[in-house]
Length: 468
Image 1: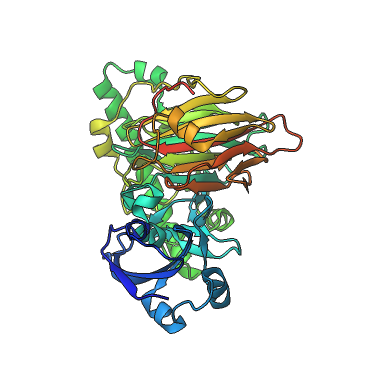
Image 2: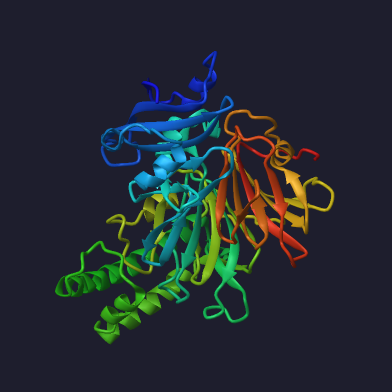
């Protein structure tokens, strides 16, 4: 073990290693003062990383707080063995990274994060023994090697998993001014939608809009419906807060729907009926777009939307945590107010388009569709026939992100059994991150019986229609 090398934040440890004129095999230590931008107050922490080098190539890495690193001592054996004995994660740098998830409870169900980095939770990367290295710590030491360049801007990949019950599983009716997002439907719960067709509230009801003399009159009528419902909602939430306090439950704690139902059962019947009438009036202003498995919804900025109960989706979005809540049929736990008035000043009243996915050029036997091409990232849906093998850099090149240019890491989400990347299988509903520096990585269909498999591929930067 050599001396510990001090890095400044933003400096890449592997780039430092590769810049050495005579790089010897062995273990190298690095230390960095890391600003935890994802925590309140952005407290600094001193991190220490160990990287093992073989044949002038970085092959393994671990990261841990400096205090723990000092206590454990420097590796005196191969890094993997040392990490195993110390019960810490050792990440293989020769293969794509398996992303570990964080579950975020919501009043309407849960979110499952794959790349989320914020105060509510930080995702990670899993090693071969199931141990996890916190993703922002990994990004701190390898910002360029991974291909982000800007760790805080990594595309957010998550699953929205609403409850199957009406109202309780309906998301906020909200609007974004900056955040760009796309949903891909992966499941429609038959308990909620026996016919297999769910939905999303998506913009405003154009028939309802036409009933008013002007758009200003429509906005005023909608705002009046919001105010009426909000007054009733506040009364219900106040009464339930009393029941929360009685039962020793924090006022801002997410609770199971069964508990909320139990509290609502104690409310006056007249109040419950009033809430139902006012909610139906409010909901009549929104348009509903039917959704089935495989459907894609691109959410334009300034378009209010609310995924409905029992419709599970994969979501890719820019990591911008801004929204304006127009309404919600439960208590909002993350903020004390709605943003209806501010949203109506900028909202788009026109019906949003949801056009079929463009079909793009693809290697022989494969199918490639452009899910979305935002300014910050693109998403494509690939279908691979049995035994298909595609070089991942060819996929990047098809998307107009050729070579190892900055921000050309790749996120892959498997939708079917049989998807593998770099020889590692990705289970349906799981995801992998492929660093930009890894070459010769193969995306393959290893399904033993299925004729084809489907995966979603996201690459930073806008997609371009490039022939493969």
